[in-house]
Length: 443
Ligand SMILES: Cc1cc2nc3c(=O)[nH]c(=O)nc-3n(C[C@H](O)[C@H](O)[C@H](O)COP(=O)(O)O)c2cc1C
Image (cartoon, rainbow, N blue to C red; front, side, top):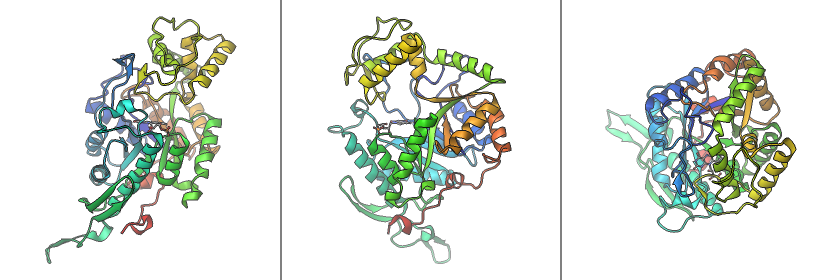
């Protein structure tokens, strides 16, 4: 089983009003969670990215944590205080350039001794794009076309140096092989020729993670990713997603093992199952305040619901698609169908709007005693619903202490999770081959 730690971010999973919660921006918080993850021999530490603060009805959405530092900068600092933990940064392929980003990830891979990973996202809206675009905003398919060529171009750049290209012969005075780093990429998205400035990094190529869910996103992952970060966390949805994505690999000449599927999940642990359920219910009530229930409902309905009672019924209106009431947040694929599902669930269970929002919050939770949680985590992996998990804590920075101190030892005892790191690079932890230069087709 593979495990990763998600640093709490700008969403309502994070209960920042809890007295135990610390800064989301101080280095001490990043360091504390990273050290916990490394103590737990986790595969990697994961940072999400938001390139524009979310807005609801034209105002910054400050019910959640607001503002976070740039990921690669944070991970570079963490590289100095950790030794084995993988370091994964979410960075957008829509608003960057391959040369610059490939350089930054190669640098992180060198600095960390082979622990860098790039979570390639495409961003979900033109609202974010306003911060960057020089002209029009790319539509969904074009963003994936760009992302795919962005990743393959980055691989060409990483492969432009082979392992033997740094000669550093003090006797002859030659430092590198003639022509090392030269590249020429001519494609519809990028047409670049030059010389890459960074010798081949310890992993050859940093690990590539993907986090989009559409058919294009899944194809992109099947073609280009080593890991998928997914929201499909329930057993049935997880199995369907797992089968779908692994089934797409053969067309790209890849084996099922070469792509790890890791849903984002939350874990609540207590001495007994009953206590854990009680604790989880309390956490959910903190995560979804009345105001948050209204804001999340506005995301679905696309209308101003300020005057509604969160403890009252669901809105009668049909959702308005693309209204812009909520901006900068990934919306619902089919709001009309989702609203119908919410209404049916509320009617069946007698739920208020807030109770419905609590129940419909997407993320899978594993709740129970340490034994129960260990069993559930393992069952999903055995049932081909996941290869592991990206654990999303609700507190910064102590939110994974219980998992590492109480659940990981049981997983180890049962022989389903490592007791020590198998090697020094993230590829070693994930069981992924180090790409050879010729394997990816570069010069
Ligand atoms: C689990 C998950 C996590 C994501 N995390 C981020 C993120 O941190 N930053 C970001 O800009 N987009 C993030 N995205 C958005 C995706 O990159 C993508 O732009 C979006 O999901 C639309 O693509 P799709 O239609 O293929 O899902 C995430 C998506 C998923 C499914």
